[in-house]
Image (cartoon, rainbow, N blue to C red; front, side, top):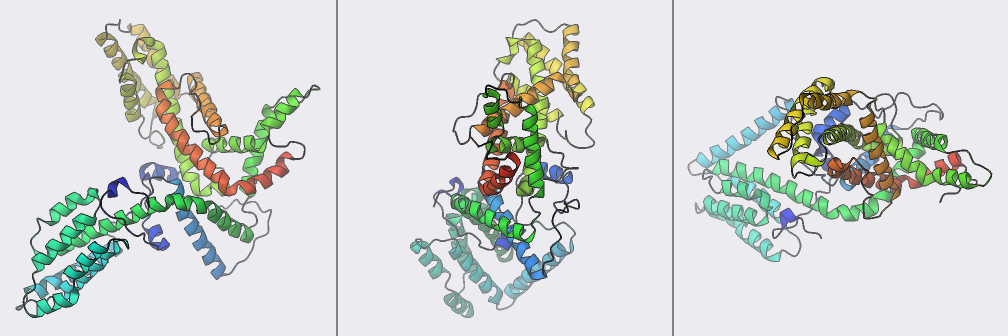
Amino acid sequence: MSQDPNMSGRSEGKPDNSEDNQQDSLENPEQSVRKKVRQNTPSPTRGNTPEASPPQFVSVEELMETAKGVTNMVLAHEIVVNGGFQIKPADLPENSLEKRVRDIVHKAFWDCLETQLKEDPPSYDHAIKLVGEIKETLLSFLLPGHTRLRNQITDALDLELIKQEAENGALDIAKLAEFIIGMMGTLCAPARDEEIKKLKDIHEIVPMFRAIFSVLDLMKMDMANFAVSSIRPHLMQQSVEYERKKFQELYEKQPNSLDFVTEWLQEAADDLRSKVTPAIDDGTASASRAAALCPIAVQNHAYLKLLKWDHLRKPFPETVLMDQSRFQEMQLELDQLVLTGAILLVTFNAAGTALSGLPGFTGKLKMVIQVLLTGLHLPSFNLNEALAVLSEKIGAEVNSCLSQHGFTPFTPEKEAVLKGQIQAVANPDNTVCKLIDSRIQSFLESFLAAGHQKSLPAIPGGLGPVQRELEEIAVKYVRLVNYNKMVFGPYYDDILSKILNIKELPPL
């Protein structure tokens, strides 16, 4: 089993096999962007489904079974494609009924424990039950090979012996707690060392037990997430067939489940056809047309269209529906990257080579741009106002940097021209933005066409200042596309064989 760097030298845990519990506690680590995405994304329950296929009536049992299959498929898909996937404890909303009930029950339990311990002589019934739960939790963290640790826990937390000591007034709760906390320190991830240290400073029994259970809950999450990271490589091997099987089951119940995919691929093929020169007698253009309209080229073009999708008005293709928020998130990131690239390009064109090579200056400008373009896709964001402020800030930064390095600062006229060029990127038809966008699309297309080659395509001219950000998005995007191709390739091949008439246009 692979070793998680956060668990080094500690222990390996067992995953929680309850898919329902995992689904309930699923929390996306990229929530801030995803929330914006979901606010602008139509519901997957589509009211404008084409009526090519008659409605099919299914029983409640079939519906529930299908829903469970889709839920399991979504969870497996999330683990595979989301490298940052983590299981996190569900936080109940403040003032919600569930949270109030939970707090009342917990308080009643701990108050009861405190009352028992204050009796004369003290009653340890509740405390011993808690020790039993702690014992089982600690044992659950161990692997079969951890014999020595298992024996230590079993011997030190022998419940029968603890009961006898309690009955004879010889129970030393502080000694038990010291062992428990020490064992937790042995088994926990390094990230929990601070919590373990705090436990040692608690000397009152009830607060100490409460804190112990709180840290144990965190350790359970750590162990579950470590198990997820460990099984991801093995899950990848099986998830392709699993997702394809689950989708096939859905397709058999709803035969129109590929209608939007067909429209998507048809549009991509039509786009490419419109760009291909009609065949001439020497056959050269005919061969070029065949290459441009091969299934791989059409699929790649179709995936590029997902980065320009109108999510409010156009249904998303069924096979990529689980990743709609991811594609939309990348679409938003690319929109901001286009603006960033355009602003940097006009800035360095105005300043010449004097500033472009200075260490840290590009990064400083990018940070300024990122801060002032925060919230770009919110309805309340005013791009013109943001660019006006940004142009003033960049103008000041450029002049300051020029002066510091012995160059002549901009004249007021030249600075005004730069500010005007920066503010002009707000225009959807801005030439510089169109150029940056076109080159980004070309880079992504080249990356897709490169297949599984390890090296990235060359960065087109003008994109150097945003190379790192573009490559990060490209790697994430191509990984998602390639996985989707592996899962749904047979469906795409079948659809494209009809759209492209493969007998006449064989794939390369």
